[in-house]
Image (cartoon, rainbow, N blue to C red):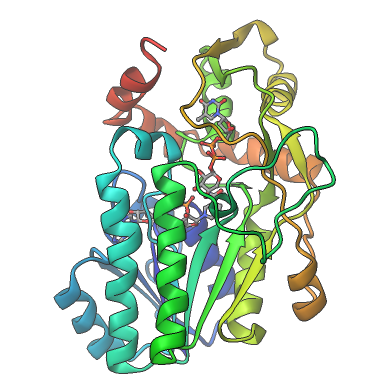
Amino acid sequence: MTIIVTGGAGFIGSNFIFHMLDAHPDYRIVCLDKLTYAGNLSTLASVMDKPNFRFVKLDICDREGVYKLFEEEHPDIIVNFAAESHVDRSIENPEVFLQTNILGTQVLMDACRKYGITRYHQVSTDEVYGDLPLDRPDLFFTEETPIHTSSPYSASKASADLLVLAYHRTYGLPVTISRCSNNYGPYHFPEKLIPLTIANCLNDKPLPVYGKGENVRDWLYVEDHCRAIDLIIYKGRVGEIYNVGGHNEMRNIDIVKLICQKLGKPESLITYVTDRKGHDMRYAIDPTKIHNELGWLPETKFADGIEKTIDWYLANRDWWETIISGEYQNYYEKMYGNR
Ligand code: NAD
Ligand code: TDX
């Protein structure tokens, strides 16, 4: 079994590679990644020398390069994590989101059609459903919830999902889609809320909270997401969408306060800043389908997951300090300098 994992030098893709090499030592895993600002080869250092692992620096939009890789590897399964993933960046510059997230997906699926595969899996997001109101805690996203996107990021992910379903219906491509809630855990890029808050706390820097901090996200430990995808590619029904989430809704402000408390830092570091444009209020996944059909349940409680995550950032300062000392400084100044 050979699996091409795209975007495997990023946050969730790398955790998925670790999971797969561990859970299926007989599989060959090929990581295809362009190494954008969000991709780090150092993240994969521990698996680089494994005989059943190969890293290829490649853009998923590079049709010729992708076809060549398929000819070399004859993959059975493709799991597509490669994407521009940060909502704030999509608001500043949508173009690359459409390129990678939509057209890159098309190139991968064209390669799948040309060379034949047993499964193409698209890693999507709960953001394609838009948001839910704060005063209706009874509402959740199911797989039947209509697509209703807010940001260029979510619109690009929703477009890709539609294309994936179209390739299934029109060409019979054996596809599955997972739509997961917010992940957290090791190797999370420090532009995102949880790692940014941990890094700023450790550096005694202000903790930017958008708007009033009342927006709600449904947090899932990254390893639970990786197990869900492993199950879907193994047992999931072709042509189906599976929502993935652990019923762990939290307000942003409560997350930031919790991290302050765990790191012994004062809440006076919290700084309310101008809200994100089009900011989604609440995400909440109903994971009944994946539970009933595939037996998936989250295993890591938030109290444990956040401890593990904070410990990881404490033990791996080199990893994130290298990131925030480079080009990231310009990004940070641009996004937060005059906010
Ligand atoms: P990330 O930004 O940490 O990593 C993205 C990876 O994709 C990087 O390694 C980057 O180099 C690579 N990449 C970007 N453009 C590429 C291209 N054109 N060709 C090849 N590689 C390219 O993202 P993440 O948080 O790990 O998210 C992975 C996937 O999961 C994305 O598709 C995202 O939409 C989805 N997702 C993320 C979350 C979350 O909470 N982070 C939740 C649900 C779904
Ligand atoms: O500095 C910040 N301050 C702040 O208040 C940042 C970076 C974020 N926020 C808020 C915005 C959101 O309400 O925290 C919440 C989480 O923000 P992000 O970490 O940027 O994640 P989100 O926008 O929810 O999107 C994430 O989950 C769904 C991933 O980045 C997406 O790739 C995934 O699809």
